[in-house]
Length: 485
Image (cartoon, rainbow, N blue to C red):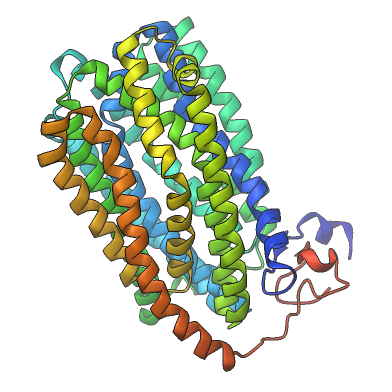
C-alpha cells in the first residue's frame, strides 16, 4: 500500500467476530470519554454562570433545557434511527446499500434540521410562556435558548458525522474533536462571561461556536478518510424502499425521544411553577445525573452498535450472550454511582453550582438520592431498549416512550401540585421501573424469536478483521471494510 493510500485508510471495527465484551468495551471507552466531554458543555455553562452571574443565571439556563432537549433530540433521534440502517448494512457487508443509506441519512438530516430551526425560533416565546418560565428570569432564559436553537444545525451535523463513524465501529475519532471543542467551550465561556460581560447569552454563544468547531472537524475527517463508503452523485438518488426503511427507523426513534422529551417539557412546566430555588435545585441535580449516567448510556450505545452489526450479519447467538454481560456491567455501575451520591451529594451540588443556598443544596440532594437508588434499573432499561432498537424492533421502545410521557403528564398534573419537588424527584425512578417491566416482557417475546432465528442463522463470511488480521480478535482494522488488503 503506497503512502497516499495509507493516508486515507479507514478505521473500522467489525463486531461480528471476536469476544463480545472486549469489542463492546473497546468501542465504549472512547465513546464514554466523548460523552463526558459533551456533558462538560452543560456543566461548564452552569459553573461559570453560577460563580459569576448568580443563582438566577442557573435557573435561566435550566428553565428551558427540556424545550431544547425536545427539539434537538427529535432530530438526533431520527438521525440515530437512520444510523441503525447504516450499521446493519455495514454488518451485512452490503457496500452499495451502505452508500445509499448514508446518502438518505444526509438528505433527511438536513431537511429535518432546517424545519426544526425555523419553527423553534418562530415560536420560542409562546413555548416558553407555556412552560411557565418565571418573569424574573424570562429575558435571560430567552437570550440563552434563542442562541442555542439558532446553532442547532451544528449539533445535528456533528451527530450525523459521528453516527456514521460509530456505525462502522470508529468511536475514537469523534472523541478527539469533542475534546477540542470542550476545551474551546470552556475558554470561550470565560472570555464571553467574565471578559466581555455578555451574560448567559455569552455562555450560549460559546457553546454554539464550540459545537460548530466539532461538526466542521468531524465532517472534514469523514470526507477525507471514508470516501470509499461515502455516496457518490448517483447514490443520492435514494430508492423509495431505502427512504421508507430510513424513515421507519428514524421516525420510530424520533417519536420515542419526542414522547420522552414532550413529557419532560410538561414535567418541567410544572416544576417551573415551584419557583427559582426549586428550578436551580433541579438544574443542579440534572447536571450531576447527566454526568454519572454516561457510563450507563455509553455501554448501552456501544452494545447497540454491536447488536446492529450482528443483527445485520444474522449472528443472533452473539447478541443474547453479550446482552447478559452488558446488563451486569450496567448494574455494577448503578450501585457504585448510588454510593457516590449518598456519600458526596451535597459536595457535588455545591461544586457544580457555586451556591451556598441551603434550600438549593437540600432539594438537589433529595432528588439525587431518589434517582440514583434506581440507577441499576435504569441501566437494564437502557440496555434492553437500545438492543431492541438496533434489531429494528420499533414498537415496544416507542410504546415505552409513550408510557414515560403518560407518567410525566400524571406527575405534572397530580404529583407535583400535591407533593411539590418530592413529586418531581420520584417520578423518573417510578417510570424507569414500569418501563423496565414492560420492555422485559416485550423482550421475552423477542427472545423466543431470537432463539428461532439463531437455529437458522446464516453466518456471513468476514472479509475484514479476520483472526490474524491487523488487530487480531479485537476486530479492529485500518483498511476497507469490504475488501481485504
